[in-house]
Image 1: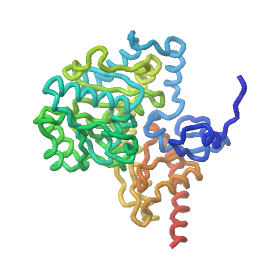
Image 2: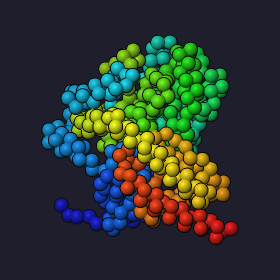
Image 3: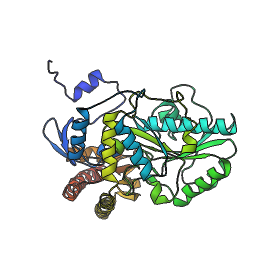
Image 4: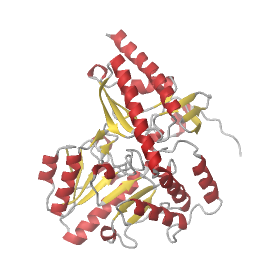
Amino acid sequence: MTDINVTRSTFDEVMVQVFAPANFVPDRARGSRIWDTDGKDYIDFAGGIAVTALGHAHPELLKVLQEQGEKLWHIGNGYTNAPVLRLAKRLTDLTFADRAFFANSGAEANEAALKLARRYAIEKFGPEKIEIISFTQSFHGRTFFTVSVGGQPKYAEGFGPQPQGIKHLPYNDLAQAREAIGANTCAVIVEPIQGEGGVLPADPAFLKGLREACDQHGALLIFDEVQTGVGRTGSLYAYMQYGVTPDILTTAKALGNGFPIGAMLTTDDIAAHFKVGVHGTTYGGNPLGASIAEKVVELISDPKLLEGVTQRSEAIKAHLARINERFSLFKEIRGTGLLIGAELADAYKDRAKDVLNAAAANGVIMLIAGPNVLRFAPSLIMPMADLDEGFTRIERAIAEVVGEAVAAR
């Protein structure tokens, strides 16, 4: 096979332009370090958008990948397979759920959850009970249904008529939610922490109130834990910290540590409304992905690992507080576990991308959550030495951005 030489400019030549990637090309990675094609090293605070929760090239996951890869990659859902059954058993043993459905992504998991909620409501209560309530600034995926349910209109505009029966309400406004949830509501879908929307944690009273209102009106409560799940907040799933149990939970991102897999978890009663042929997938639940995800869940559900999430969370927040004392850059630092947002002060409005670019130039990979929020979602086992070195580089990058801002005044 002839080698094809590629550079960053190749993206602009051959790829559909729905992304605007950085000007360097990551080439290899281990732990919380990434090297680009020029050999430059970066410390990874992005985790592939909260995905590589066990870091890059984790030895136990590499072992599973090789062992299962030599046995069976894919078989199709006309058959079952041992890895997916073990994964389903592990997830149902560790959560409220009785049943699991596996897909390839968080969007597909949410698509399944929303379809199931409507099917359940229509079969149990009648055809009028189809309303879905979501919240402004929420993000639930990029399929047409999930982007319509998501609370960011920019992602749904320009594609023609959208699915009907969807209502968006202010996040954390329990009074409006109680007023809106009624006889025709089939489901309320909510992120325990809005990730893409700015790393905004739900008020515990808000989630408890949603649970009560759903119970009162026969609606299902769906927790989108695509970003908050699999240890990200310091418990296996965030609902466990809130003390509010959903009817349906969706999970992806960290579930495969980079191997594409998502899941919808629910109860026996609700799952019974998805009968043979009603919904499906070709790749979802394939043995290769399921075997990796089972090992991920096994490792991350270890209480010692979850304790380490809290320690790293405190370290990151301490670094951010120290940086803020020096530069007065942040209006608010918020989040739970290793999903942390730092909202920029008004003097640096809309400069989050500038900080991200400066960080990259200084050897740090970061995320933003909108134009005003820096987002941190690193490996749950990030070495503390990497964490500290990363913030040395971040502080250097922020000094550059702040210096430019001062010079421009």
